[in-house]
Length: 94
Image (cartoon, rainbow, N blue to C red; front, side, top):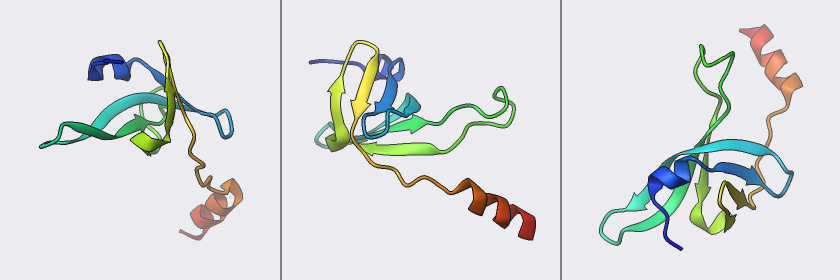
């Protein structure tokens, strides 16, 4: 299968471990001498209508990609989720 980087940027990335939508491909990591794709970078969802930037970025190694479809990329990678209660406690201390 051949695909351009522009074609990858139009695809949404979904994690099959928990069914979570991670976002769309924003960048591709390539080794220059070999021309091999090492990973894709997925930008998180926009924060408050895009006024405050985006959420966290996900670096997904090429080995974690299970299937690339017409409009979706399925990955199998468990992510460590942050505890929202812990985040609130940290904000109160500052």
